[in-house]
Length: 479
Image 1 (cartoon, rainbow, N blue to C red):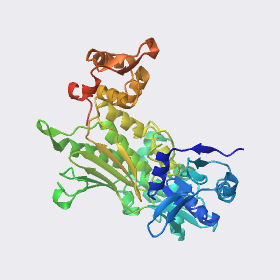
Image 2: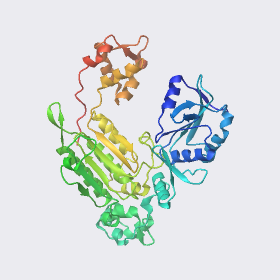
Image 3: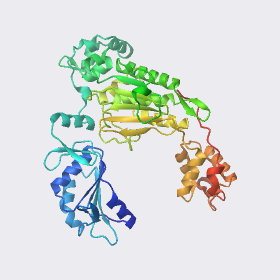
Image 4: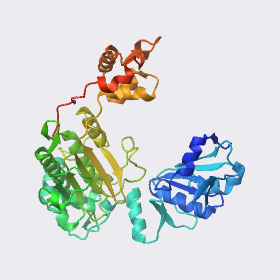
């Protein structure tokens, strides 16, 4: 199979040479030993993935970088063999060679994806990427935690030290059985579901069916709700409106009460707007789905609570544990992976299950925000948690989105505009196109018609920022 050689421009060369080494980027000279290269690739694969450029020198002491690549692709064979040993099935990585006019040799560009399994370097040690460093995991507990993060094993299946009566004779399990398995007995059913083993309940059984899971799993399954009277990046004791509210109990009750409390706090909040104090309005579906997602999919091996923080301009929901397996903030709306598969399956058996649409929770939240004319939530994968931020910031108007698109594109068609504006009916886009055409901000591209009609900049396009009225907002259903 021939090697792929990509031609890059002087501008791209400059960007590569100036790229800072970060959590996602590393640069190496061609002399890097294969064993050391395997450590970096292992670290990327076990964290969030990343890019590696092999063939960049750093001149000391100035730290100036220069391009000095391989003489030919065969000269990089030992480096490519590292990839083939780490990824024998040929998945989760891509590589190519970069060539630039006036530069010496070929740069080996390696793109590594976040993997579902743990990758060990040539020394058989496990590495993870943190910032610009590759850190070895030497303690068994650290490797076990990585297994939880990867979804190789799940803390929900661990046994607790509590008596089985905490889940076989609780009010919660009795109510559940009467609704779901009216002819069954709790203990027999729980054992059949592998929720009791060796006469001990699992973490999953405790979270779902113990009346007070927090007594068995302290600091691992609580939810705290805060209200900070500020729009600053951080809340402080001085801006805390009241003592944090702690919500406990079986999982389904905890989800219900957490959504109710977060909604109540949001409804009481106000922010400064053009007309003075204004209500903060969010879609109820967004709050419900994001809180539900946090409770069901958090990493229960980490001793911390879920934190719901209501600010003047946003709601933050932070849950312990990084995104599992191959899930990243970029693909989370399209990919599926359940860290706590039993929890997901069993809580769905409730008649009033909070997760009826399996795997669609965050998609529902994003859609609800767009319907109300608010910007998409932000999802951040932090060192030991996932942070979802629901912003009280309006989307640009549909007209503005279309005109901004034309600032960097020659034309736009109906389907492109629908995707851009998150609008279903093409008649709505035609109405918007018609208004912009009357204002001479856009004009029809000659020769295009019907389903392929395209629009380009009009005579008044350069003045659109002053001619377009401010959007009033859209949607009505909010919490």
